[in-house]
Image (cartoon, rainbow, N blue to C red):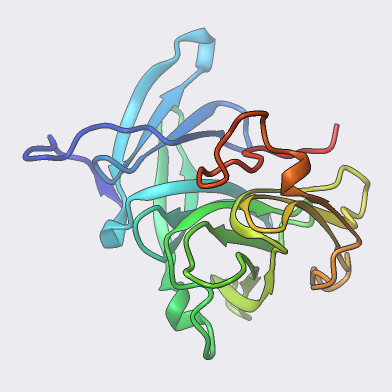
Length: 244
């Protein structure tokens, strides 16, 4: 990743998500409007922008999450207007947070057959084991939404990369959010679908492999979640789900 230059033309800032880096010092802000990340330094309560970096592959960053492995910190970014995935190592100096791209790819190239993971992504979640990654898209064009299961891996030379494992249906259409349960093993994944039969669907997760059982253990139909008076033709399902 390179320092950003002045953005010209039709590009404009549209911040989409903010995450706190694993050290707790820097806020990282995804800006799909100009294909960049803004870094805010919170040291001594200054909250100053310490840098802006351009994302490679012009993926229009839409969602991010941090991963820590082997003493190193990484940022995984997925595209908002395409299916690009970027994994960057985060390196620290006294005053700066720097990014080095270590892996890039397209979901369509990571997946063997099928087209479920070929639409722009809506979000991602990294499990507490810092290995399993779950990415979902809202507009796949299929009769069901899908969750893509990926894993963070390192080869014998400690080079980090992302590997696709499988897709599972969400039980509804246009998944808006996925969250993992708060138990130590995170044995469940809960999905909010904007449309389709299941507004909320819970899936059992194998903590050893990270795989999700495609048969939901519980669902709540969308017709029980729709706000009174909303047209059947409108997107009406839940937008947010999380265990408290």
